[in-house]
View 1 (tube, helix red, strand yellow):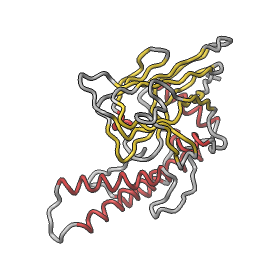
View 2 (tube, one colour):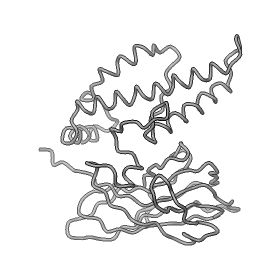
View 3 (cartoon, one colour):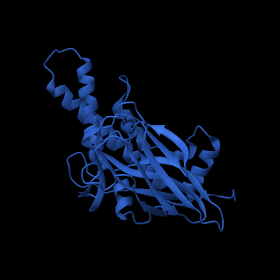
View 4 (cartoon, helix red, strand yellow):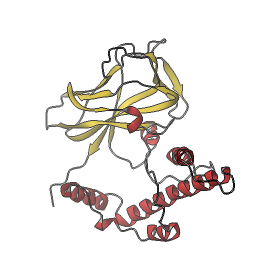
Length: 278
């Protein structure tokens, strides 16, 4: 998600005006090859005029989140009171609430917002018309669907049953899928509940090979919003059609604690278009 926190000397009025003039054709990336691929992808799909408008509108909305959070925090302080650390923490909490609303497709007043970007919840519901080419796989594993530790619960947003980690000490889950030829990005679709408690990192693997170790709350900052947890990339060679296994498990601890409030839907594979340079 986008998180806006301007410098104290920033002129917010001028910044908002500059959003109208965003030109991503000159944008840079840390890897020049990635920059070339991104430019070609934008040109072959939505085009730069649409992308410039979309990015500008996204930044305006998130700047609005910051401004509302600052106004709300200021209204809670006593006249003449010095700015303190707790005010910063309050600002962050208010900003995160506003950002979560935008991620759910709501504007800052709570009304439905016209969506111009495919969110994770749209992708999972199959409601992202014209979106990326996707494949899905059901997640299973030891104790998955066990009513005492990883029960299936109804999710009102996705309108189907998902897994909820509820008291499990050692998490281990996986999904298998056979993908078509080409390069794919693999994700677990997950969310954090209000009662989230997870005492260790998780290991993410593809076909048994570790891709990364991540702290879930650092990757999934917002509560009660479905988000993609990136695992890695997999390339299916022509004519092979090998099965790929995507795995997630908690790091072993000497005294693992029960884990709560972590929801898992499915594994999602997103096809990555590759250009030949022409």
